[in-house]
Length: 315
Image (cartoon, rainbow, N blue to C red; front, side, top):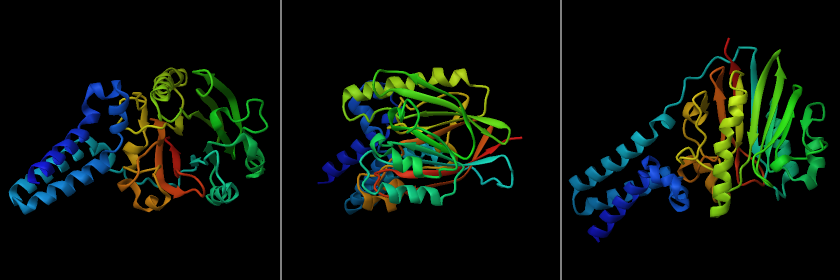
């Protein structure tokens, strides 16, 4: 039994090392396995503690090995940036939420969103057949989606307190595979907004499509690189994947706000946060912006948690 548990500890250690291996991103299965770093660390620690029955010293050594590997791999996600005073008038309250195409509690979910009193709502998996719900939410705001000719490209819609200008739909791949760019004209200083929702990597074909869209995001970002910028989306991947978007002019919000989870396999797991979930809904910000007051929140009928945060413009 001791040898079996020791083997399981080393297997979890190997799984923790997946994000560091260059070959991980080349294989569908390895990339999928790399997403569950928190869970591997927990399981590895549990197995390591079981070794106490045979050797306390060996158990302590294995616990230290698992914990140090996890901390080294994820230190950038474990340290939150200090909260900034939000008295600055040049700020935006953003709510980002995946509504789920087949949400049977959509009216309740939209009521929850409106209660946040945000400036901009970035919505994903908006069902075109239920566009009337979208149109009725905050009718005094500016809406993108529903009444527009394109409808909701890849299920994406925007509701904003401020005007939305220069809207462009970049078709990266046929079918589901667009990136939307637009400007939010707030306080006399526009925010460049980029939204995307690549397909969930449920099979190798969708995995390749997702990777291609995420890789081509870089080209879109370069076209607007000098502006204050927010990239937001349900990326359907975690920051541990080598396909997670990396751009030297953009900072992933997760590296500023700390580790969180936005998707859980069951509703009952959501209260346990990152212990039972993974972060697949993300935002990236340019150096012109500071992210503040970040929280996740429950969205009725959705398998995702929503994201709420403030963006403060640097002077």
